[in-house]
Image (tube, rainbow, N blue to C red; front, side, top):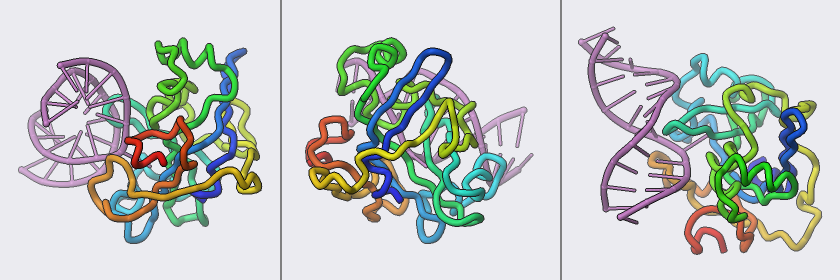
Length: 184
DNA sequence: AACGGGATGGTT
DNA sequence: ACCATCCCGTTG
């Protein structure tokens, strides 16, 4: 699913402010054999949504910021995909205002930057992303567009299970985070 | 109640 | 390479 989500469109809508972006970078967090996955360690009120049905949002705070995940897999598994970066499509002035920067590359590259740009916070947690109005994921380029080459790497900033190659990205896309070696 | 660590990001 | 910053789960 982390691979499938590349090229899909993430949309948020609050009042008259609409923002959208192509998903270009994701990371998988697996329920079994992955100590970096929150659900592999604990089943607590915070992680409960990860054990619910797929297609719902798991938003959690870290370092005073937010990360946005899509719950995947079967009910009760505890699996999610972190959305790390999107390529801005629309609502760019809104994103620039929220981020306080103009540079497109710094708008929604990195998991917490995209949350700030698209106003994803704790209120988005547990939202249904397949039918949602305020936050939703729509069909996009998908894998039908042959011009997208998806590559994988180890996950960024992860200290446990660090050798697993569970990060996926659209190779060469300028809105992917990390050093050049992890973008090409 | 206190403590420690983390799926960050901006700056040096 | 450094560190501001803050929530959550654990420990006592």
